[in-house]
Amino acid sequence: MVIAASSPWVYISDIAGHDGKEITLKGWLYNKRSSGKIRFLQIRDGTGIIQCVAAKGAVSDDIFDLSDKITQESSIIVTGKVRRDARSAGGFELDVTDLKLVHAAKDYPIAPKEHGVGFLMEQRHLWLRSSRQHAILKIRSEIIRAIREYFDSNGFVMLDAPIFTPAACEGTSTLFETKYFDQKAFLTQSGQLYMEAGAMAFGRVYCFGPTFRAEKSKTRRHLTEFWMIEPEMAYFELKEDMDLAEDFVSYVVGKVVERKKKEFELLGRDIFKLQAVQKPFPRITYDEAIRILKDKGASISWGDDFGGDEETIISQKFDRPVMIHRYPAKCKAFYMKNDPANPTLALNFDMIAPEGYGEIIGGGQREDDYDTLVKKIDEHRLPQQAFEWYLDLRRFGTVPHAGFGLGIERTVAWLCSIAHVRETIPFPRLLDKIVP
Ligand code: 4AD
Ligand code: MG
Image (cartoon, rainbow, N blue to C red; front, side, top):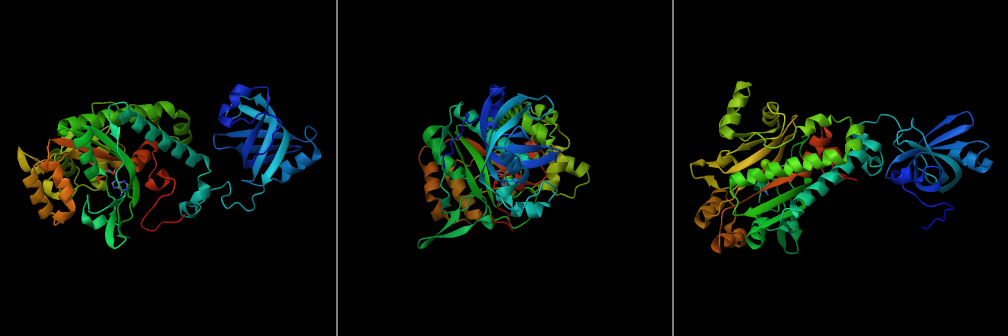
């Protein structure tokens, strides 16, 4: 629908360039307030919110009548004169001269009052219109931009990984199985194995896409569908992998904090804590992490993997992300290379975010020896036949290589300081949630 307007159409984010001029806004009614013969209309257009003032006498009776009756989330086109006003949030207001109703919304379910999260989650398709969700999702968008910027300007080739896969990457207990004509397939848990093929072809590659895990427990850190960025580098060993991860995370946090100040402020996020995220990040071994946990009285034994509680205790000791390396090989995935200095350990690392946000990165050096890898596939009871293509990478010019995966939603939760990952993705998929 093209709706003719008498004055130029401007987005609220660009309003400052039109001080004193008559312009047109196209948007929706966010909120409304009355005072005597004045109606204050909060208009949003996706780029911001501005207060529009309709005064009886200054506009025709019809328009004043419309400004009086107009309901929340009705779509409207407003024309008026831009006026600088230091008291208003965006620094400007609009003195209304004309108002057109595009569509009258009736009984919008999210009233401007407190609602429970359960209710809001059911209304997720509408909840996206609120300022808080705007701030979170704009920060998410900026995080993704900074991530891609980092890899694209550091010699990486972006290589897409498939979604339908023939085999597990991260253990068989969280696989989503689906019919694939007369075969069965699984939704990808990670693009890593494909990135290993890519690294042997291009040297440095990354993929960025949705990944799926049938997580059967309800936690504030697990989604069944989440987005992961996965770089993979040929001729990298564990140390270079960790160096890259810390350089990457400090770059992304720095850029996002610099570019999204307004959004962090709206969320009440203390960005001082994020400004501390400078390299080098502390690095501790799994053994040292176990000692920290035991000192704090946690009931953990050597050989256990860490869960959210353990990660929170460890993160509290540091003001920036901490990298824990060399976990017991038996609690980790089949593709990890064992430490030649102590083969019970894997050459892997996890990066744990500060402030109790838990693991944001998992990665490490991959097993590059054909015979050892075949043995590991067998030990993990995986069907070797499904991994024949992957074993080819060890048959034809195998080299040391490493990579990692960063979960976008946990990164958003940490940077925005929100307790649960459900608000960090436009349409979350959880154990009990697939609508809308
Ligand atoms: O530690 P994970 O399982 O590692 C891998 O998938 C490797 N194949 C990555 C690689 O080396 N290329 O997952 C990596 C990250 C976690 O640190 C976490 O941030 C996120 O993915 N993640 C989840 N985020 C939300 N919900 C879930 N269920 C997640 N599972 C993992
Ligand atoms: Mg992990």
